[in-house]
Image (cartoon, rainbow, N blue to C red):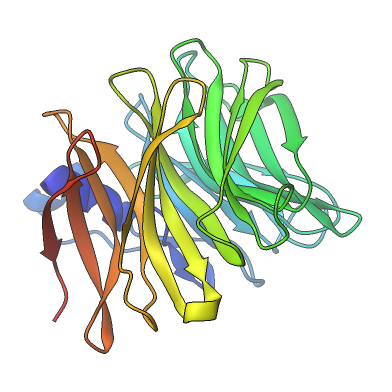
Length: 298
């Protein structure tokens, strides 16, 4: 449980005008609490995801307006345990680009996912780097698409989820598989209903070789968004889906999903609880049935 809560705290939200992150030191228990480390310049910089690296440091993914090629640039930043910058690389072009996720890869490098804008059109964006952040390859996918989360697959390729308007102008949850060089192998689209604005926020590999995606479905005609969890097979075909937070006029969202050690799934997000939105953990069995819901709000 604590591991899940820790991951929820350190992923997806690291926003404070500047790219900011408080690095927790292992030695903190032996002395005063560590001070926050601030990264960026005078413009609007932001971090979205962080992972611990194999050498005990940290890799951060986000975007910066303080440096780069113009607009906002996707950024990978490596820092040590004290928050000292080891290296920083920006990616993209003259328009707005950003990373939403970063993961370590089997070769010691990194895979980052987000979006890149060219000539006013935004695309899902993957960048593969070596251990020092040097680009091995970068690719864009779709049109009016973006990626929110990525995972390396056992075959050395990658699977990512996000949002796509390729099939529906309102937007579908998109699950896309690419090979080790970033070449697309397949793409799947999931739509909650007509006029639904849908997006995938997290993807995990499942023990049966498939995938589980967590995000939301936006039924604007009913004034609501629903937490939406989709289970697929290895080819991305839907096996089942579960919706939570179906009361009209409420806004609910799944932000992360993990496979638990017992083979069940744990979903983190927020649900409306009366007039407020509260953080929740939800445990689902392998068929998508709810085992329990834990509410952490007031």
